[in-house]
Length: 295
Image (cartoon, rainbow, N blue to C red; front, side, top):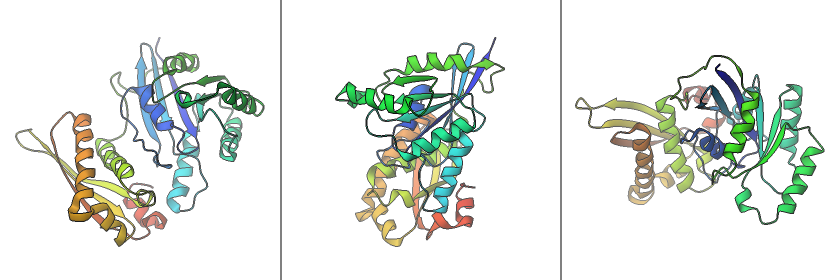
């Protein structure tokens, strides 16, 4: 009998939610970077293991929004927590409980959603006692279905988590083909791979004001190459200059790194062309958010 489970992945920014999604699915579904608020929309990852199919919903890091884009991201978190079979609250193994984590737990309680506490990044843990203190603090606030320490980066504990998630799978048909691992359109994934390289190569303040739109993806008649044209939108003329760099070197580096990942994703040779345009204050403009796919 086939079974399915919908699983929401929630937490503060930069705790490793997207890295966890990639580890669970076994594919590069969500972009990752050391910068907070890398994920902007809900991202679906799919894993089929025998009779069980897990549909993971990775959400943006919960935060206090300062722009209309931020409002949209918080809305994506709330939608991602609705109508799921279980939620994974991802946190770091040390430190105090963040107010945002308390808010997430309260909303999950209101939804009557079972919650598994995930203590990620245990590979970097110096003292186990500190993790035990954090577990005790969380346990005093919520009755968790399970508590699982793991390292999404190293893959340690992933099998244990999947085994635990199987308890929440319910008899139902599978919603996706067995070989599916995401429902993200190809163009969206390609745009995100470009943005990932920008996050890794640019100063902290610039990537948050950047959006990428793939304008064209077209196979050449002989099937040898896929031509991709992408537009990078930023908010300031000064940012445009930084993105392009001296003699175009920064943009070339971003494009080269992105092309390598895109070729691996598409399993084809790619000719990637990127242009940079300024769209002032797009994160606070409803028309721009709609045009860039955030509405």
